[in-house]
Length: 342
Ligand SMILES: NC(=O)c1ccc[n+]([C@@H]2O[C@H](COP(=O)([O-])OP(=O)(O)OC[C@H]3O[C@@H](n4cnc5c(N)ncnc54)[C@H](OP(=O)(O)O)[C@@H]3O)[C@@H](O)[C@H]2O)c1
Image (cartoon, rainbow, N blue to C red):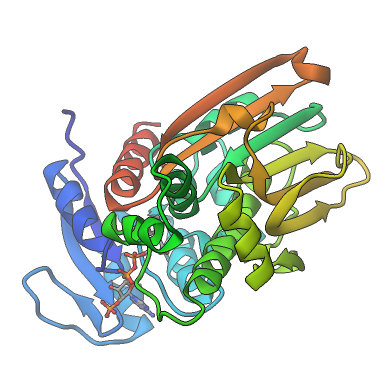
């Protein structure tokens, strides 16, 4: 395996940060610092000053910043760390989607001819959904895109339908695979689906902004208002009809028809020159085309594109493991290699 001889720091030393540090080292990268809520550390464990100022200082000693933190806000913390490193001309690899969801200025670092910012791991684990779509799509191309973007919800519905198990057994399967945090018994399904739906809104905004559908990023995650969180009745219906999956569909110009969908969200990104982008997401029936092509197991993610009228300009399909630390770390390492080799 080709080694990457360079010096990095890693922000966030949790579920992703720890295996990421190991993977960087295995690939020849010297991890000089890790950053968590307590401050900036060397790997031998000495704590430096717990201030942004210290982060700014240690940035000058590395070539690469890897962002793998999770803070309880709408992405401001991720943005501050990411932007400081970019402003100093550092290469940044991130798996933190919230910063991108609401700070459209970051896309110019990810989409330039010599990108400084690698975002492939923010969507779809190591399935390669973002690079695949970026190669395929362009502004004004009439296209339908259907995506499974949330491995945890897909895993839940897969367990429910495939094993014909109860919702609590399906949830146990999701937890066993480390795809969700254990949550309090009361309202556990509603809060699980609400959290994962929010996650899907952020990922959808990254797909829309980055993948060449538009000439410039236009979609703020926070502008999505029509979110249908699941109440008791909706949950009952979802658990009864087991042949549904959470699918995000993106259409150029207009929604095709009334859909049978439980939960999810709808949103329109308005653009007079390139045509509106219409998004409809939620639990859809997978017994008819095109959704039947997205019947995928466990924590997988997938994308189906239908280009031109009725697919006249081509179709494409891609799937891969979408959730969890291993695929996320693998995607970050691959992305780093690609950026450095340019
Ligand atoms: N887990 C997954 O499977 C997965 C998959 C794809 C993408 N992601 C993304 O990866 C990121 C990290 O997720 P995770 O699961 O590794 O989270 P995690 O296990 O909760 O770890 C979060 C890390 O962020 C650090 N942190 C929080 N606030 C900070 C701040 N203000 N300054 C510096 N460090 C701070 C925490 O510090 P302390 O150690 O001091 O608490 C901790 O080390 C998230 O953006 C998530 O969306 C995760």
